[in-house]
Amino acid sequence: MKFQIVKGTQDILPDDIHKWRYVETTAARILESFGYQEIRTPLFESTALFTRSIGETTDIVEKEMYSFRDRKGRDISLRPEGTAPIIRAYIEHGISPPAKLYHLGPMYRYERPQRGRNREFYQIGVEAIGSISPFLDAEVIDLGQYLLKEIGLREFEITLNSIGCRQCRAQYKKVLLSCIEKKRSKLCDTCQGRVAQNPFRILDCKDKTCKELVSNAPTITNSLCDDCRQHFSEVKRHLERLGIQFTVDPRLFRGLDYYSKTTFEFVSKALGAKDTILGGGRYDYLVGELGGEETPAIGWALGVDRLILALEVENFRFPRLSSGLTFVAWTSETTKEKSVEITRMLRQEGISSQMDYDERSLKSQLKLANRIGADYAVIVGDEELADGEVLLRDMNTGAQDAVLLSTLKEVLKKRSSPC
Image 1 (spheres, helix red, strand yellow):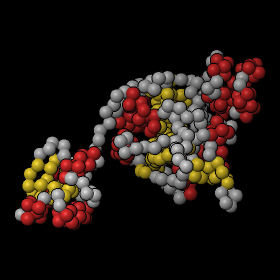
Image 2: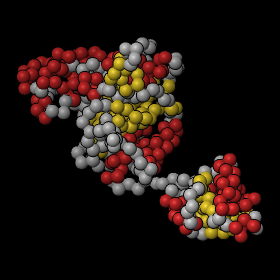
Image 3: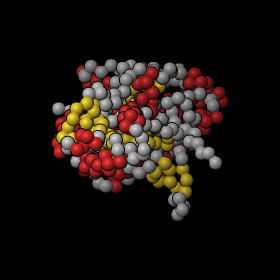
């Protein structure tokens, strides 16, 4: 039986892995320069963690989670997003605020696979826990735009909104319901159920008819309380002071229930229609709802798959970092045995090294060295070995010279050093 990959997943092959490493290493460098520390959580958690945090009436919980029961009958789900697990860990391990954490890795949602959207997808996310300051909102958004620019994305737009606090949304819910009730029969089946459960989700519906029906509905802007209006005003002022361009979209409601106050999306036109590359917002109630002391927080998540696709559409040239690999090639049975010793010696010195054990010619060995991306080839010939030397070839330029075997490791370290 010939097996094939499961629909909605992908293999990241050696010819493409440099793109992912470039994004991940660049992101880690920038995030740490902003004071964020990496945290890693399990791929699966208690299902209740996500239903409690994301919201039972969201599309993710209703339709998209990979959920199952383990052998002891516990309800488990593969993580569909990264924030809830981070907050669970924050509470469980007693991490002290303020805390700035970042995470990266795969997430899982059972949605229709399409270009840039898989059922297994990769995210990089940040969570800043412990401050209600609008300065932090601006910093988190600034971090997002700086990161995308440093990675190499040229064209994207920032959309911003405030969805207020619990009191604001309670007031807005009444206004929204009075408008929607008149059109309820024309909504899609899903949204008709949302009218009673969570009418805000209707604003996030992708159905064309639903979008048209709510296009003239009142926005939450007029329902913001004085504190939320002041907070949002300060966020916008700080962003303007930093020279960050944005557009306010009063209909922007992110698809997760835990958001409050500031919400935002970074969208790219590179994928055809506008598509979100990065999105996030405040979730000031989530820590309290998951059993901790009520603590303000804000964060975002970046879709790595979609970012790489957008970069490819923009014809970005992903840099290939030097592999640092040295290939040891031999010319006879005698030099083959010596090459095994040389390869082992280089590895013990921290020099990435490889050799071929099959009966290939020197020419074929060097072709292999080139194919696997070796930077240098050490050629062990009988005559050179008799003189205590080897030939060292630069695989990028073709330049080749004799090097004393006793100094080979020092020469390789010096040539491979960025300085």
